[in-house]
Length: 299
Ligand SMILES: Nc1ncnc2c1ncn2[C@@H]1O[C@H](COP(=O)(O)OP(=O)(O)OP(=O)(O)O)[C@@H](O)[C@H]1O
Ligand SMILES: [Mg+2]
Image (cartoon, rainbow, N blue to C red; front, top):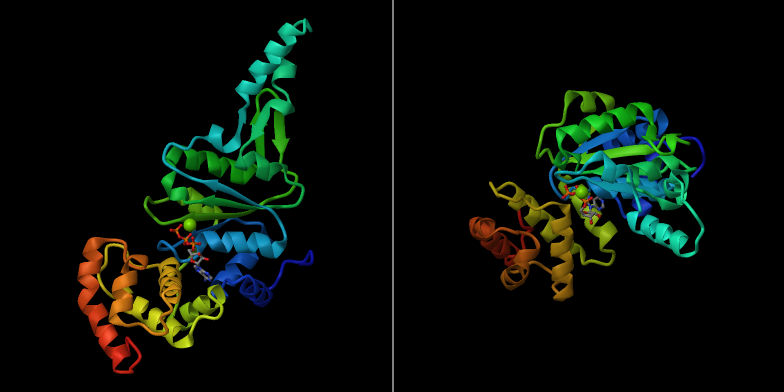
């Protein structure tokens, strides 16, 4: 890809070539990440392609993907850098045994003992990487405040080494499932895109992009069935990931259409709660009856 930021249509085509179906709004948002150098906050339900969008952007730009997976209790230190204490101790011991005299702090706290974690790695990359701060809603407020500072300054201070400034601005993508509300300050700093479940046509295109060679009838029936399931008040509605798993499970059973035995055998690929399976049973029976009668399900 050339140095000028790719246009939305160019991005869409490049994403499709990598098996990712991006709609106009997402392609535009991703383009702005590159063109404006602003972070993008991607929110949306589980399994709608938020993480994969960042991975595909890195592949499309031909740059490194650096991923920081957030979790409760994640602190700035483990996201930035750690000192390799085991190696430092070995070094001290070797110096002692070799009679090499005193080891200075400068020796011990030098580059060779520094273990860069994702944020420091991102800052030191020569070519702007895609920095994926995944599931930022799982981290706590204190970490969010620290992130805000980093996104503003793009420099990190390692007390023993000094301040390290970013060589280039990483392309930053944050994802969230909204398990916790993020601060207004973080939202203001970012561009925002809500990733919704895809339309039927888009989801069908995703099935074909990810499972090339899948039977058209089966792909349509699975897609329509997933859309019918999402209309139910399920505890865990199926995401695109489940659509793909379901279609792949049926393909592995050599199914060429959706029928009652196939649904029974593969239900665990699409509904992951017992209550949801019970709630969806009448809908699924109805869908199987429709496909047996030769009508498209969900029609
Ligand atoms: N638009 C799409 N085009 C192609 N594949 C997609 C698309 N959306 C989702 N997928 C596929 O669905 C699966 C789930 O996507 P991903 O892990 O990115 O979801 P997510 O939104 O990050 O979910 P979570 O919130 O659970 O982390 C992946 O295998 C991804 O390739
Ligand atoms: Mg994800």
